[in-house]
Image (cartoon, rainbow, N blue to C red; front, side):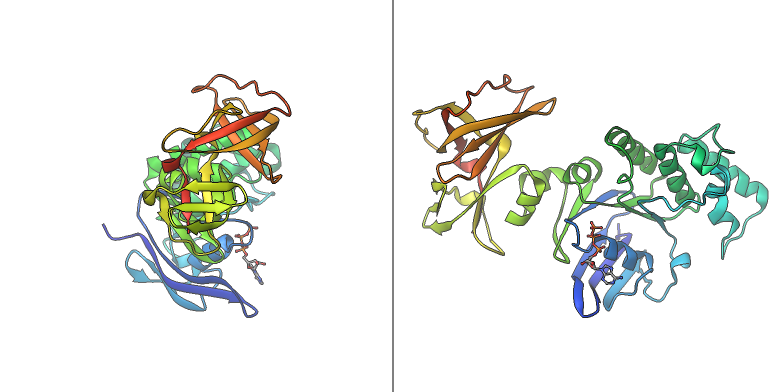
Length: 358
Ligand SMILES: Nc1ncnc2c1ncn2[C@@H]1O[C@H](COP(=O)(O)OP(=O)(O)OP(=O)(O)O)[C@@H](O)[C@H]1O
């Protein structure tokens, strides 16, 4: 199947500073894609170029096999959901949702058909009974649904969502994640969802695209991004790796944290300074003095504190040079840890579990 959306060598800058530095991308139809990147990496700029709010300086945007660089936004058949929802406060829920259909530049439809489409969409997003309410009389989660329905009712093939859950509180955000995925699956459209949250990106996307410094740093299934980040920068951004600096010395990685053997299969080419990464949940905590076995690496560390987060406990240990190493114990796999404050432990992991960027 040919891709729904393709970007070829898209570049965009503002006032001489490049923001997008040659983006190549192909998005499948009927899929959920998370676009993850740190603040300022160019996520919103990329969405705006795809939607046609901004023109690229160079490169092509291709939708359904056709170049759309010269097609105005309203003719692209691409929906956009903004973080602040951008609803009309003086219109009812139903009028907000019907707005795009009423004011269509092309494909105007009879009033009865419009009403039916709006009613079907209200049901789909779970707003039945609230049709005549004003925007000020509904909750944040309901506003989010209105914003989504208003876009979906125009039947776009591609919907761009810019931090769509950013304005919601944590509880609601988690609930709306499931809803967004379910609504998308029912309609078979493609969602491109921008977020700065690695947990949200991994939870929602069939594919996660990582944008860093105006380039696509990785585009993979969520479990691949999580367990095989393509660079030390991505590993750092995922917030679940301990990362050591150092250099490669033959079959070892050597740095202030110690000397660790490298498993050949774990080595990735480094784009920046060499780094050694070990996931927080791959580290076992043993009594001080316990030696590392065959195929294991270890460092000594002093327990500082633990942070309990429901299904897991994150514990912090200080290494001899003062840097902190984080260990995650999943409570479904291990007992809740009871480490003694200021006590020394031996932190151990399998050589093959570390990723080496060198
Ligand atoms: N209209 C503009 N004029 C000048 N600079 C801009 C403009 N829009 C964006 N930028 C700059 O481009 C860079 C990327 O901005 P963008 O909003 O795309 O990042 P982002 O990844 O969406 O960030 P955030 O997660 O903080 O929203 C930033 O340095 C920003 O200051």
